[in-house]
Amino acid sequence: MIIKCPYCGPRDVIEFTYQGDATRTRPEPGSADQEAWNRYVFDRTNPSGAHREFWLHGGGCRQHLLVTRDMTTHAISSVAFARDAVKSATGERK
Amino acid sequence: MAEIQSPLGKAYVPGDHGNAAGGVGVTIRERRNLSIIQVTAWSDTIPAVLTAIGSATGLVLQNKAGLGRVAGEKSVFGFAPGRYFIVGATPELELRLRSVIAPDLATIIDLTHGRTVIRVSGPRAEWVLSKLFAIDFSEHAFPIAYGRATLHHDIHTNIQRIDDETFDLYVFRTFARSFWQTLGHAAEEVGYRVE
Figure (cartoon, rainbow over the protein chains, first blue to last red):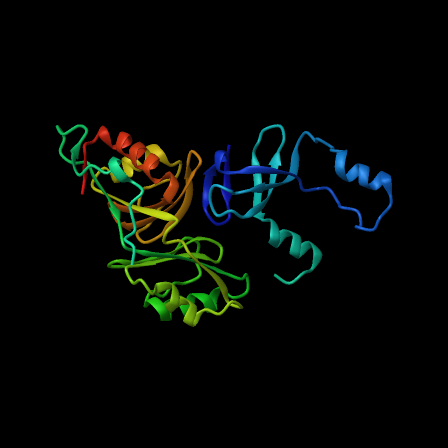
């Protein structure tokens, strides 16, 4: 599998480490909602199709990436720096 | 001042090795007595850091992925967003950079004792390096003076292209002897000279 890093260009998957599901929403730190924490920690949808996930390009520029990958075909439709994607979602300054 | 010892030790054997029938496919040597400094800019200070690096070294870069410049023993290249290697034969390179780059612009780490620099040159350099690293070494994909960060197995390596058939490899000092031997094995096929 080849992942096209936004900085380094196309690289083999051996340079990357999977860092988990990027669709989860972390409950507020002070939340005592056990169901919400349980969903956050354990529940995964495991869809057959496009899925957002975090990868670390540890063997290259060492940036965290947000990758959209098809779970069935492994085709990758988008790759972005995770910090940019998170900041634009939260409206935080880049 | 104590003399810096090469980590290559007895593995560094000058002379011709491997298949001599086809001539010398690549020449490999260790570049010594360099200062190797890593500068990491904050996300909003990259243009200011590039200006400061230019004023300290005379090598001015634009903010473009992997871009680098080479002038004699001096070189600069980017290998990640806002991260640069600055290399030169000047012992006070770190001080010179610190005089123009305050902590609110970037962090500066002296890697002089942490990296070994191996120069690979010759008509078969692209061929030999392609055996070790899963990146495209052709000149259209990896232009002169550009930098790359990649892996050979678990040995992280920064690579800068110096000219059409010359590359500098920056490997961790503690892995340098092992890597040197692997490089020799990869180059045996084309014949190699150690200078």
